[in-house]
Image (cartoon, rainbow, N blue to C red; front, side, top):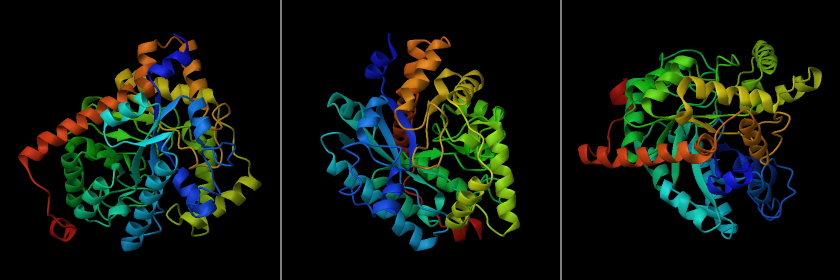
Length: 388
């Protein structure tokens, strides 16, 4: 089967795309000014290029910076969710909102791209399980437990160790996510948090946009023991394309830049200041280039360690300034699958990578949630009760 034919049968479902925040930053969510339906946008993503890349499903990130906390974070998250709904409504002839695996496949049957939502960072729920449940009601289908900073109940990969994983309330967040059918996303969290969450999870978890630490030593990547635990959990690691997560030289460049920023009192938690610092740093010290071959190495490593049933794709388009050569925009998935086919990947395995694995995880999380809801009702726990 050609890759084109394979993608018609198994369209890509990508785990993470930051177009909504780009739309906020560039045009205040005005899709008249950023017409992603027409194509030729300055973003990495538009609808014609998604189709060209063989994408049939997209988790749109409802990211807000970790510098926003409390009610401000919740409000900004709601604005991002609204933008996702407005995007789908505006391009309803091409997009379909999806909350379940069946709705993803119904979108495909109607010739449309399935649009799902994922919240990037536990700060978006302001330590409230009721807020978590309401995000689920609004269509959010995963929550990344942290972003670049710790939250009061979980440690981030890029912040100081506080909890050594999850606090008691953090465990309750994972349990409640499992109960309502919201995927636990372990991208951005510390390795201890990854391990802790996988120990307590009752349904499969995901990494929405992470790669393999053994191939590129970045704290944002999953160590091999975590990939093995993810296999045992039934989850999926959706390999990302971010150069500093896939290329060792780019990772070293980022580590040096982060250290220089820290010497000036700027941390990844200071989203705007950190981005401005790195823009200037990139001008002074060019970022080493990554390539499609780097991403191939990560996809194959995850397959080797976790198994072919536990690997997917999460490009992080419109969430980074630079992307690997050959993967510069959302048309790149087709080239990636072609490279893997040339390396001997079967049609069946490519179908699992493209979308089969994440659809299975969604279905198992949905059925697991139904079973858990027969066992227990909504958690009324508070962080003050559990963490003191």
